[in-house]
Length: 357
Image (cartoon, rainbow, N blue to C red; front, top):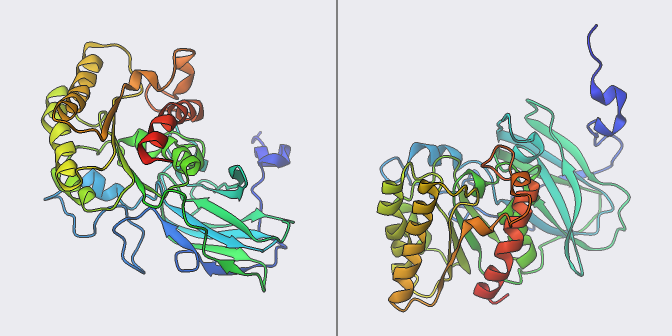
């Protein structure tokens, strides 16, 4: 007997349809929508997180491949539409055995209220579904409201459209409280593996709380500390940089050879840019873990000894907290939502202080 689909048994698992919603779809990658998170993207170019001129002469092939994943990408806008829908064409999507598709290929929507952004809806694609057309809001107030749509963490979007009720106004969003972006560089954890949906990655949590644009340069398995990327980062006007670069250095020798030069390449171009150096969150106390932490701490110590007052070090062993650390990952390495939330709560006071938020 063939088992029934779970959506036939429990309607809460059924994928919603735009169905009867009367909406007009508008290109969300064009004004008045604000498409953010791709620092080097030119108008009308595909979404990409790296400079388009980069080749394997500057950076590894893995990072080039992952540049088209949209981690950290957001669409912000204001509208008085009482209903909203999403239509998106996924250019890339990945099904992984340890991460929900709602995180790797999904979208989630937040609305701004007086206390900050509040979760509104998640767009949940089916397996192998490349074209999404899903409702995000029904029976809204019809009052002018600001929204933030997070793009997939491990997929790329060839197009993104927002459906609004006919005759509704769509306006640019309010300026961010922090005027310049916060940039994150690192590994799969930085990219968002393995959050259940995009808004739950630690970088998205931080930038939503601080109200800043996010530039996410987390490259799964491919954050290798290339100087060309550090120099490109140094060309940007930023509020802060979080260097979560540890995991993807293949060994301690590589980390020692690249970590401080990477920081120095940024610092040479931005002497007063706040930089937070973070060691790995999944600290198990091995000799390798301890040595890697000391390499990263040494980058901070050398900078501080030279009079640098704009760099801080955060011991990654603190990120998950002392209690129930084993509940913070899906596989002993990659954080789940609890792990990302604890990382966010630990980093938030530091980043708020460093950015003056």
